[in-house]
Length: 309
Ligand SMILES: [Zn+2]
Image (cartoon, rainbow, N blue to C red; front, side, top):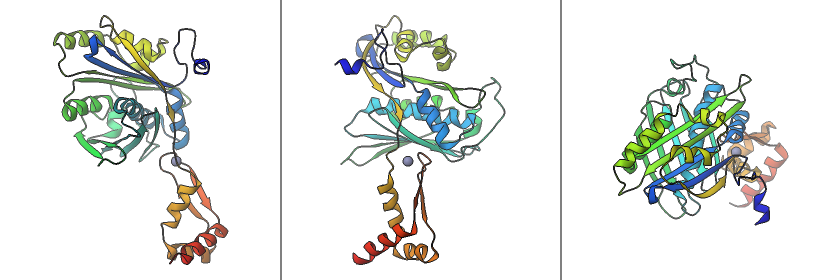
């Protein structure tokens, strides 16, 4: 167990990006919280996102990371897609059950004036549209469910998804605070849900506890960890922590997958590139990485493809 203490401070809380999962009110409440500054910063660097898109993508990525830990089927993946008529156009995020997430925005460099609250106008950047959640487990038909966006602010939209799609009363808060130099200052969120059979008084208690919170990032700015945040939001409700999961931006793309994508273009396309002496390029949308296959490699692939048929 000694090795697992690395990265934990003297209070036993994890210091880097992580997700916590817990329960309260004798299991009638389940709760998740995340801090993910590095995760969102990596997305910002990979995709050169503007502050507005950093916030939009970061919010959806963190929701995905918490949902990955929530669902926890073996090797389950959760994909969240937002499509909107605003200038960002759309967001796509995929998270697994191990706190890892990848994601991209259709238009990563959108700038907009702040909204009436003097905050990044994520809702205006996304516009009207839909949120789709796809749960994908090996050997099981993927399960997909979509809801209309409520505000495009992501947190509200996820809340609506859980209520409409899963009939689970839920509060979702996700927030990203960006520095003047466009780097990420704070990123975090929480999901709190009432489980079937909950007592009605818990609704009032939760609403009362949540009423005084202006934003998740303000709690992080106050120095709170995800554990602190859930203890604070669930005060008086006997919060019990169950699990801490490290969180990170992770894309599983590699040279081999990029090569398969190029081979999938077909022999005619490969021959064409070889004849023109053009290297092939494969771009990973999720992490922004570019793979270049030189013509000598393309010749090998063409020879292999030709010998197979
Ligand atoms: Zn990638």
